[in-house]
Image (tube, rainbow, N blue to C red; front, top):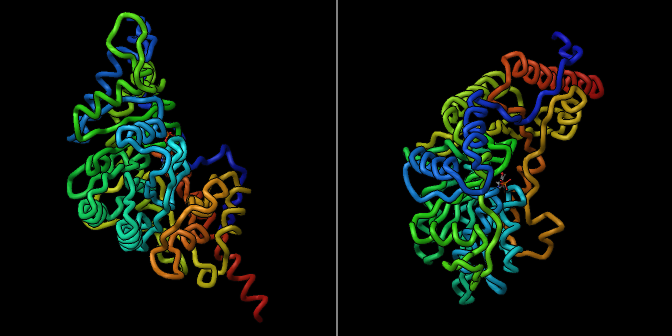
Length: 397
Ligand SMILES: *Cc1c(COP(=O)(O)O)cnc(C)c1O
């Protein structure tokens, strides 16, 4: 096989910003009209455009996805002494706002079918909580890497115990289940426009509320909770969480091209899958039936026994070639920050998220990757696995 270790022109990123080319138009408009503030026409328009794209709910533009989760918890009156159930296989920002409120996160394992929150583990956790007379104030469910969780079962379980759902859709804008957008199933949904997400405004987030009054309250809390008075009068604790009008302009221009970005990422996934799925020990992240995932990141697990190479060795070889790969998120229940928090595994003695963390790899998945980039990644993986197998065989002989 041809050695793909040729001099590399530039780094292949995991997920880098991909501008539409229209951003400056919105930014220039903002400058010309002097709306250089966390208030202005781009913000209102961006909210309405997001509502129209996702087809439901009331949007509030904020400074980050993390701020949006924090606001959802504030609206649900989460405070010290409360518990909140969280997906464990996710980025830390899913659960940090629980700590901001002095509440206690309880972590729920993944299921093998979706890699997302296990309905089985959630059921156990809800039943235990109910028996002890202390149900969680909310369940924060993530749609990891743009793939839907088993949202129907999770909704049914939460409805049974009357617990509100916050969908952490930071990675899943453009993902639909049975034609319905992620982020609109729960009482609240959140999106992120950080630099590595499927579309980016350089930073920023969006809170989606089912209820218009909740959206009004979120806006109030996100803009320092000023009571209606000419002088500065405050009776609630507020935050400086509003999105800026410049950022909203970038977001609007990015939203125009979201569908094409989803198609490009799905196309990356198809190419990787076609080339690599038949290799021994490689399994791509599954997707739930009736969903249209955005495939934000293409991820797979590699079984060391079957493939002959450990996930860490494979990642090391790729990083040496200037190809940015990452392990799957480290489960939050294993993070020192959350030491001592309760954890519900998918089954007794079988932690799915831990297995995924030890075996999972995220591949470069940007919508701006060239065919050449994708082939370079594919060939390097094939070459590395092939060589390892050959060396192993040699040792055995
Ligand atoms: C990026 C991300 C967030 C946080 O969004 P920010 O806009 O960066 O604050 C939250 N949850 C998940 C799963 C994310 O990937």
